[in-house]
Image 1 (cartoon, one colour):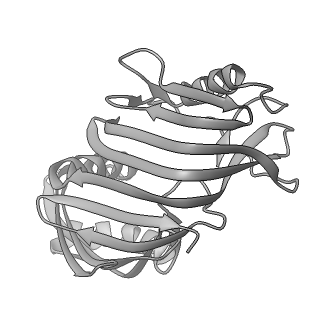
Image 2 (cartoon, helix red, strand yellow):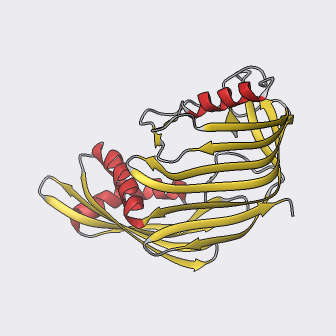
Length: 268
């Protein structure tokens, strides 16, 4: 789903490019020039849409709230070649590699409750999606979130260490060790579980458990456990857009010094 923050579908390729650029700049800061290139064919038929997000940084301020479409979707664009490149995207100081390329893409449009146009992926003949992050960068991301969550409890998080092991092509075991301190007490908390990814690229967390050593460890698990229960069994989309009729296949998770997810997709 891609909000255009306009109340009408752009009438030509130049207007579409400007609207896409404006929407991206609500959430990203680019070190270069324009992030969007649109190659017209016979609008709304396009030769290509290319989003160049290399070295772009996710803004620290909260992104604009995206209102879900309320009206029925209608055909909007047909794109022969669709590309996204983020090599890397910078998220809270961590580098995340992202790339996507698709052929013969069909995009619908609908209106949200605010009356703004939202673009929705409906079909793609074929394509490939790749995302990767080093274990060190993943630990840095988790550390940032853990520090923010623990601060309200007077706890200082000192270190995060993550262990990942791929069980199957679509599932992995994870263990997160969090070293925390409160006043003169310190402890390591161990959070474990597994994650599975389905054909719509939704990640489901299963069997989340918390164990901690000593008084502080027990205290930390006391306020962590209720949060884990809320997440246990829930699915979270790894994409910012619904896949419509697009079907993912050959999804693969690779672990090691880097966590990498790849998937091919298409209508069949």
